Image 1 (spheres, rainbow, N blue to C red):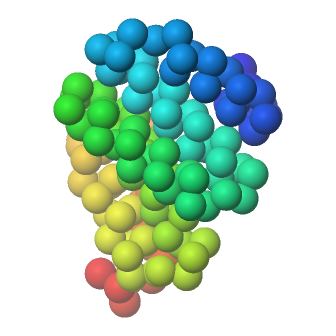
Image 2 (cartoon, rainbow, N blue to C red):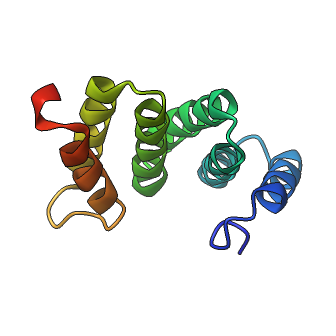
Length: 124
């Protein structure tokens, strides 16, 4: 609920709590909790912590085949790159999301497609 309401402090507290209770082998849920931390850190403006969490969530989700968390982690990474004015890198990252989204695309990829276009076709 806190993610849908963009309540960063609650997301951090609940994600950390979940991670402390989760079995280390419960990778699908662990990847979602780590992604949630990344999102909360992004909301708080802590780009370094957000980037680190997105990278960890991506690693876990790719190992388990959790496509939605993979897409959302890459999208989060692209948004951090965009805010840091790394536009060519962000555009490539967003294109990666669009490629992973498949046909028909996951709804989460729509933002990546739009952001890739806005980041500039000159970077493709």
